[in-house]
Image 1 (spheres, protein in one colour):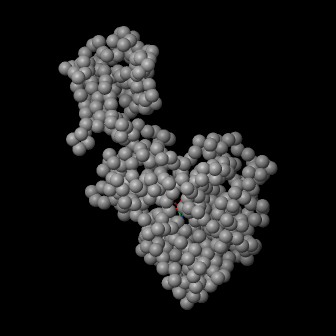
Image 2: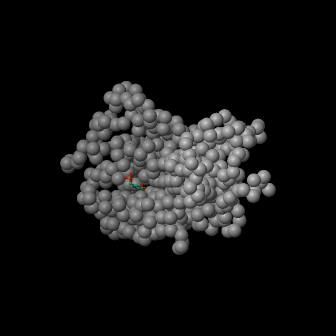
Length: 479
Ligand SMILES: Cc1ncc(COP(=O)(O)O)c(C=O)c1O
């Protein structure tokens, strides 16, 4: 029983009728704090009515959730009603960051003994920040981009920029290309400023130089976009679409290709919209003609799953997904010899221009490049692909405990993309917003997700197991 029980007003947080958090408010002087440090008014701004918050506690498994936030929010509703204009608290020392973020200010010396040490703090009615405990910067990104980026890579990005014509730049540039090619087992790569869409435009234009008819596959949003790339870049092709999330029937595709005498195939290797991996390698061992040119959008694949582009014609990729660097660099891997085009092609979209200028025809950002280079070193050292697989198994198991099953297209799923179909009455929009408020950015805003009531949790970045525990707790609390 608290010694001030008769004078306390308690606010409690309930989940399924169990108490999971509480705080007490009391306005009788002397406060508990004054018994530890003497009179406090000299430290405080002018006020008319004051109250002390005590006994703020939240059950361990809910500490990373909205409970503290909701309790304090309720406390502020209460003190506004009662017309208090300042609150004091003995703030636990290791939670100072949190208190300060809410708007508490420290005053006086630390109080307490070696078992529990507190910083006296106050907050005025006007300085309470209701928004969220987490600033945008503190949130953990479980998005398919921008991904969670390690401290070293962020540090590399913030370096003073170097000219793309300097020797130091070129050294890092060629080493980055070497490491990229070794990662994906391709002969060559060109790197340019741009998004994944731009990389796919560069790839489409390169396919166009074949002057032959091909096929473009789709079983998701990004497959649909490849078909659009095909039309916009005037490729001669047959579109081959199946419903989202279904696996391709490779022998049927080979049949179509043979019948129509098709020379190349273009598909999304890892379809980000569903998390499915399209196992194009079946084409290599199938009855398809062996000089078939296989072209891949490998934007979500590289860095997240084991890839081997030695048998493909070309593949596109970006810096800001599985490679755990900043978005802004696009790349196309290729194994063939690039010839000067006999048609007019925009300079920045023509691979030949890059080869002709030893890879750096135009301005390239040192910061983006150096961050990518630093990240490639980390990925290798930390065995990224093994880590993604472990995280995937772990979170899948945790989600199963709370009744959520990610969509998995048979065995062919990218472990860095968990797609969770939400069932009514739960809305992906509400869950995404709730998780954002609680410090986790998941993917729910793209129209193809919100239309289907899907949420995606992506493990493409520098994610740790502890991050996932907090996330699962927050989801548990939402459901
Ligand atoms: C498989 C795939 N292709 C293409 C894109 C388009 O990339 P961007 O948005 O960088 O243009 C994305 C983006 O998420 C993707 O996942």
